[in-house]
Length: 69
View 1 (cartoon, rainbow, N blue to C red):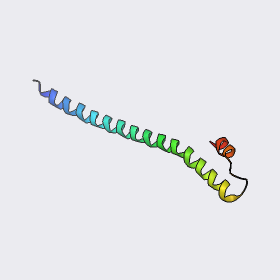
View 2: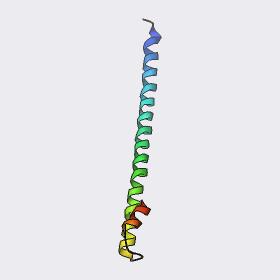
View 3: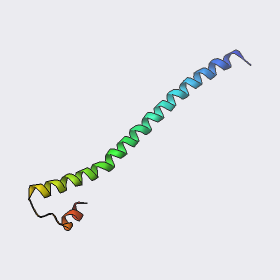
View 4: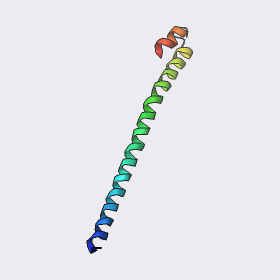
């Protein structure tokens, strides 16, 4: 075995570790972004229903609820 192979293997391993950490961070941020995006619709609708119900702007009917969703 040549002397440079171990040094080259060490450098490649370090680069792969950095790459893996980058992919992991990117995937975690993507999951967080999608979770916030999905739940924001639900919380927005719930907040709208609470405002209509307690604000007495109009009677809360199934037609209002379906049009909101």
